[in-house]
Structure formats: C-alpha cells, structure tokens
Image (cartoon, rainbow, N blue to C red; front, side, top):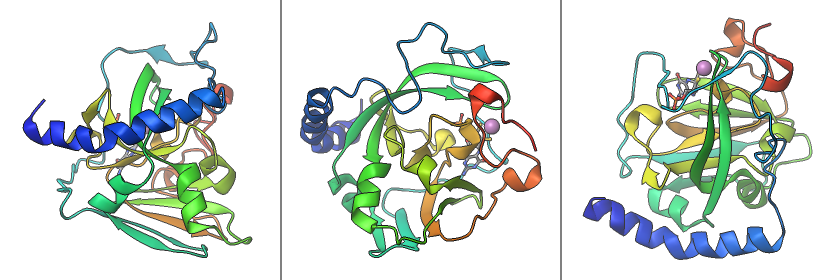
Length: 222
Ligand SMILES: Nc1nc2c(c(=O)[nH]1)N[C@H]1C(S)=C(S)[C@@H](COP(=O)(O)O)O[C@H]1N2
Ligand SMILES: [Mo]
C-alpha cells in the first residue's frame, strides 16, 4: 500500500470498526435478498469467475478525488452535494456481496467499503412522491432503480474493494453497488443520484435490457 492509501484507510478505519460492531449487534448476517451462506449461490444461467472482469462503454473516465463530487437531489427534502472529504466524513460501512453480471459471470464474496444507501436516505429524505432513483455517471452512463431497490440494506456507494481503493477501470473514485440485481445497475464513476417521481430507463434499459434485472428469475432482456 502506498502512503496515500495508508492515510486514506487510517481516516476511515475507526468509523468502519464502529459500524461493524453495530451490524454485529443487530445480528445482520444476511445482506438483502442475498444469502451468502446458502449452498446454491449461483443464479440460473450464470458461471463463476475468480478474476473480476471489466465492462464499460469504451471510455474509462479518470476522475481524481479532488475534482470528484456527488450530487444527491431531485425529489428530496434535503439535497446535498458531497465533495470527496464530505463523502468520507459520512458513516462508513463494510459490506460483503456477490456480483451477478448479465453477460453470465458471477463473482462471490466481494468486500466493499463506502456509504450505505440507507444512510443516504436518512440524509436527503425523499419526498413522499419519490418512487425511482436514477444513477448518473461521469462517462454519460445512467441506470434506473425503483426506490425500493435502492432502499435495500446491501446497497452502497463504494470507494474500496477488498481493502484497496477502487481502480479507475472499476469506477474510481466511487461507484454504486446494488448486489441483488444484475451488475449493470451498479453504476461506476458515479456523479449524481437523482430521486424522481417518474421512471427514467437508463442506458441499457433503453437498449433492450430488463427494467429491473433480477438474476434469480433471469430478468435479462425485455
Ligand atoms: N458508468 C458506468 N457504469 C457501469 C457501466 C458503464 O459502462 N458505465 N457498465 C455496467 C455494466 S453492464 C456492468 S456489467 C458493470 C461492470 O462493472 P465492472 O467493470 O467493475 O465489472 O458496470 C456497470 N456500470
Ligand atoms: Mo453488464
């Protein structure tokens, strides 16, 4: 680890430990609809990989933490824009989840660190009419979720994977992780989380992918 990385993890370590203790005290072993202890964790039509593939639109934006910001706005009572330091100042959590990509690979036991969707909801307070969440990314990519999909205990905006900062190709400085749905819902290089009354199908949803994307019922296309 570089000196920069050590400084970065030093900053968030105490907070991570505190939130881990809280999670353990609440007995939250299952993350959302993903039961990592179950024997069959492989959804139909998927195969398991060890290495983490990279998928993008042919652009990998290079966003420094100094120029990064995350706007969380739309149908909310308290819109915010977080710069990098403010993002790290939020409660930090560590989550374990499986990745299921619609192109048929799955990767088990990914350790993520970042800020939970539940915390974001507490901060911005969606208005009663908010029903959808749209992620916007620095490469122009968008993807849509129902608010109930975002409001899941395993959803987070991650800055780290397996104890290291995310690499640029995997969405640095920060990306969404929505593990109960196919991985195209997990926007890399995230810059805006928009709450909306109306649905706004995203890049792949407009190009034939399913509007939801449940790997267990193979909501791949259409
Ligand atoms: N901003 C952005 N996010 C994105 C994509 C993208 O092209 N741009 N591709 C999606 C798709 S289709 C997949 S499978 C995953 C791939 O993430 P990975 O490259 O980290 O494996 O990112 C998703 N998030
Ligand atoms: Mo994908």
